[in-house]
Length: 171
Length: 167
Image 1 (cartoon, rainbow over the protein chains, first blue to last red):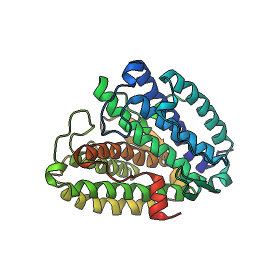
Image 2 (cartoon, each protein chain N blue to C red):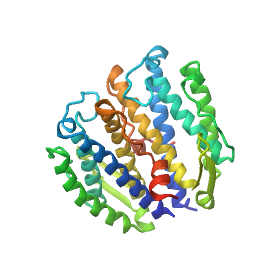
Image 3 (tube, each protein chain N blue to C red):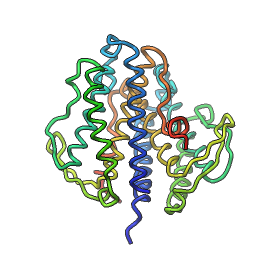
Image 4 (cartoon, helix red, strand yellow):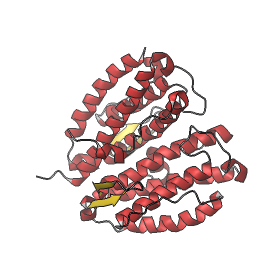
């Protein structure tokens, strides 16, 4: 049976999300721990590559916790990780948890409204599908910053357009 | 559900584009034309927004069965000139997105990119690609604006839903 289109749409962008995160993480890892901690500029949301990656991880994590019904108040970031290797370990485990969660979702789950509180305590209520799109879009914003920071550090990194992702050989 | 998902994504896209272009216009003509450096995809705010417009235009042509050999976006001397062309295009793009059916979303788009390389991808992920592509360049525009005047307002989907759509 064909998978419903809405699952394809959501799971498609999440497959892209994991691929693009890993592409950038590998680029940063190749530069080494020292380059990843170097301040690149205050015009960026976070001044270091490690800080930027840790923020993508932190936002992904807090949203997953909300979807699972918890009320997290802590947004993880740079200071929570001793090194890129440490962040990678946590991220691998989060990614596995995200994959299990995403594949458990059906059409009815996407439409279900979730109540949650932002880290400042403000209450919000939204259907799940909107938040699932938000997380990927949020990360694209910061991945763009990472791409510029990499360009300033060592030259332009490989593209992470969705069209490039679709052309990858499928497993 | 599927067409709603795409339509609302484009509602967000149009809002975020307008929000940032307004901020950039407010900085004045000199700032919008200022060379901000070679480490950006495009060196000026005018050219960066011109590229978002150009890519959006190019993909809409492909969805309609035409594969243009080049992408517009470099022809605008000012943000005002771009705004005029973009307003017209945005209306056309909105009408197209509003008219999409669920069958349209799974339709395979066969296109040639500007280098002549052929691609075949279902329309829905390509519609998502256009918005994701723009978010990448909006992020660059936001960092450039930060360098010129300080951080611009947020253009995230969560902010859009909470403050504009309110739901």
